[in-house]
Image (tube, rainbow over all chains, first blue to last red; front, side, top):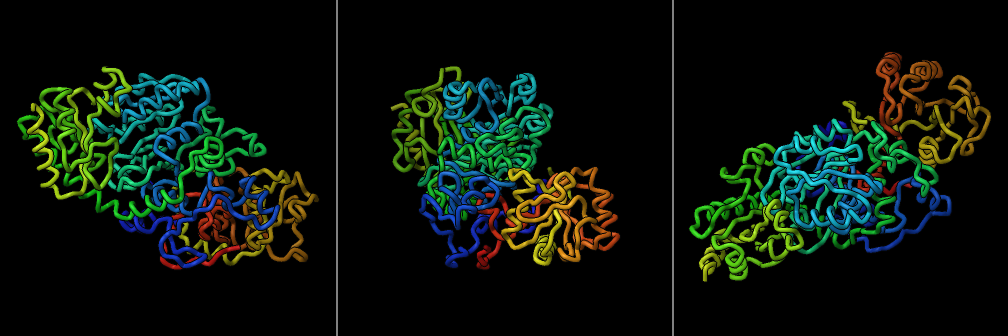
Length: 436
Length: 166
């Protein structure tokens, strides 16, 4: 699927090699082997003509770190390489990535389809804050892909799903939804945060754009916020009249047309030259550096995350105080077959389970943990535990919570890299206090 | 824009490292057109670009005289044309390639979005090297690390220190 990428590196070099090397050759100025942290706001111009060329986007180069920065660019290229995409734009957070991506596609009055089984923060961003831009999210049950085809409206500009959704362990049939998006002439955007490109590469199944919260498994150590938009470079923006920001003259750049001028690089250029320029959520070079370092061990970490998560899921499934376990790596999950297809190396490290005794029991288990950390994040080396109904999903209605797999008895785990027996022992003692 | 064409990095490096003078067919006198961006960028990298465009014949574009057609370029004063870079629709490429062969160009390069397999076969049969659906500016930038500045996937992995290009 990626045989048109110039240089053909995705075929020549393996995933593990690219996780370490892509985007970060030795520094040309100093020979530094590790990507330096270019903590600078701006860059000198050779002369006025050079400055003009940069501002006109007629040449490559750096102007100001709100748009591009060498350390951030290294991270962008690495993520683009791992996803098999043409280019990437890093942002200050995953939410910023979603905002900047949609900013290139949407105009006031436009709509998009989104799975209603998404990360709770995305449901709120799409349903509440995007509405203030007059962008309208139409939420669809993703379990039947045909629901997307049925919900399409003429002003729909994209379909948005998660490859693996938190907290319900929901796996989307990416290939089927991609076909529906393609037939409608709109891009499929996949949030690949929980799976990471190590487990799932949505472009290989027909997705057009991938977004990430790099804060999670890509960075992997709970130390840096960040987000990314990756463009496959394969979407034909001129096939219809739906995407004027990319196909019509841009007044702020003297009438330049992004798709005509930059071809398969158009979306990535737009997200930087317009999105980051005007909305402002650039990633800090320090965060880019920490995330780059984290990605170097992504393959090893994801293998162990998945092993530990499966062991924990099996333990919980056999535990008398546990009502149910939702983890796509278990044969009991309705998403098991989809997980085997789209993420055969493992179903990730986030799972949910229901504690017998409902809301109160769920809260007690979370509070009784001594090793697992009670906090609102996922994708850390540390094991994390959360009661979504009282935290990440508390802004939602009861019905929305139930649809998102975040009912009152639900406990969410992000299984870390500690000794797996220690993780299990902590959960065991906490479950012992559930009906205290 | 996707296609099944594949050009090894070594081939592109060889082309971009050996040509000096490039005739750009479809070069625009409008400074904000993609062809003008490419012309200015390649000039900055040391190439001489001869613009070809019947609508702008006789005018000057970025310091170079524009000619109506490839055969109108006075090679006795301009020097040999090493490569012809084509900024025209795919179905207009045929006669341009015939001219490229007749003026002795070594390389025919069709821009991003431009592809004409029939014309390419004729050029190759005449001994020319052909690249289609690529932009020399983008490929130059990619091979010299500049495309990576924008967060693009260059496909290049190396432990060697790269020389700074100008």
